[in-house]
Length: 133
Image (cartoon, rainbow, N blue to C red; front, top):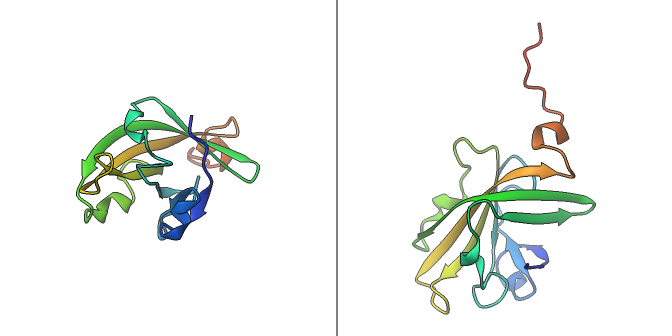
């Protein structure tokens, strides 16, 4: 039940909401969209998300629903978590420091795009996966 603005960048922007990590794809785009937030504010309870929970992001009039499928901890210099994920066309990576009030590690929560305005990503983007004969 978190409602935050998603701003571009992860510096001063995170004083006012969560930050889209520059260099990663945008919300709902093909690839890995990464969003970071402080563990003292916006992402205080990110560790409470569990497999199957929904993360809903709104951009303009479009609602993107992602489903959580994994969470793990890495060291701060493990930037590989920003790369595209094998087998996941539309993914979301949420990032915050962990443990609480300490910045020794990063909590990573992974989710896959399951719904865009009531349609699957394939339907929404009109991807035709059938073979044309």
